[in-house]
Length: 169
Image (cartoon, rainbow, N blue to C red):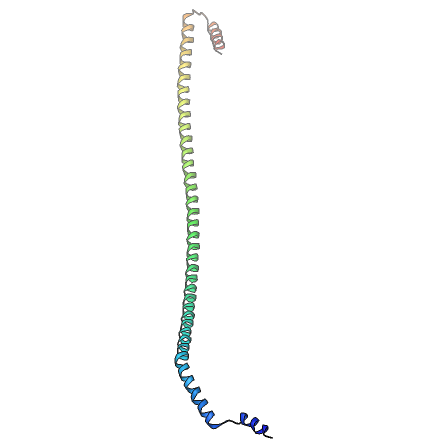
């Protein structure tokens, strides 16, 4: 029986023990709180601020990237427009150069044709002048020969003229 009350003393709290445990707990909590909890709270607050700053920076960078992407799209659109304009200008200039070359070729061909016609006309006139000279010379020679020969009748003169004409051919 004696053992039984001892077993219950351990379970039953003593009021003095309870007060001293509470005082020691509060003192330890105060010193530990001062030396450990404040630096931990400061570190957590600093960490929270750094995370928030990183999130803000990421949002700013994301907005900046979106702006850069929009700028790049605009530059690409402007480059496409410029390329289209340059290509159309080049095609226009090529057509114009081809047209000018055709016109120059036509003008040169017309000039060559005109020069050739003029040369042909000059040669024809020259040939006509030469032919007239030849005919005139032949007529004079025939007349000379007719006059040199003493012909008594018209029949002799006609036969002689025919013979001379045949000799010329």
